[in-house]
Length: 422
Image (cartoon, rainbow, N blue to C red; front, top):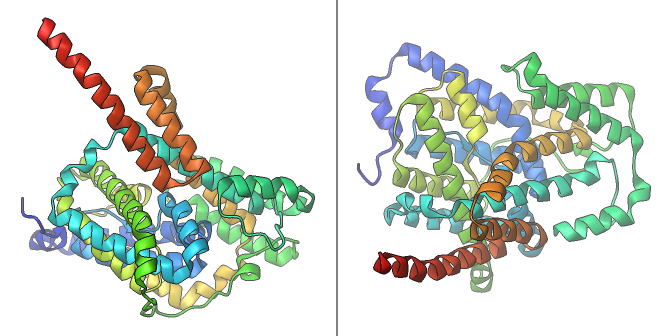
């Protein structure tokens, strides 16, 4: 298999009208799913709502065009929320752009060094641990808006600081905001039983915005907190400094590793659905190009999104054309309808993100490891999980890998002794 061989060009060799129609339909449906998620994930990351769409459009297009998977859909995902929020809080938006571009360069290097086949060797307890930890941090981060609370001038970044702020500001609880969020969450939970074609997130966003607006409910909306603008993404050149680049190296590596793991996992899942085999190194190079482009056009880090990829396949997508259509559709929405996003109530955004956290937490896998895995694996899992919540992903992944290696080194001499005795 060639190092860099985009699936788009091989797929077009046997392309026909029916495949094009299927891809267009799938791409539009995936765009409808991605619209509220992209906005919500940008807010969860501490970015502007429009930056989520920039990411889905620019990175989504580039990665589909150059990617090593037939059906992978890329864009902002929950995995990056906490690390992006931390970068913005400490280094500003210029720092985020630099970190995203650096992560893109690292991903390209991963591809050319054929690291794609090595990603699968990262211990499962580490990936499950930090994934569950990210889910918990997202939940903690959304409690403020879900309960309609206000932190005044406080802008806590760390999870522990957010919990402390929630306790200190409990008197700002807004029953109306909470009711809106609770109803939205209930709809999201039960909606799949009503319809699997229309995404529940779109339903609650549209209906919730109309109800809050028509009845004049005392609920904060996106427009109350952010300036919403429409128009094409424009080139953003950050102010580079060597100090900032050096400071962002750990964050850039963390983004690159997360993007590698999540995108390749998405590729593996989609391969089984369409009976194909992705090119992992091509996918990593494409992810790198997509993240560089996303950073340069004001977006946030991107990677393969398993839920959106699955929706693409289930709705008939069978080539990278569907991913390109998804990006073009979102661009049209950005230009024409983006001002309407200002009407979306914040408790509904919180409800959408709570469902995202639940879907990504892998709690069954987490408890299965706790019950059946060796104690060493359980320790790695728990430590990674706790450190992700209390500190950040950089610390959690680094410590998790070190502990896993130490346990492996301790086990190895014992295994060799047993072998000699036999």
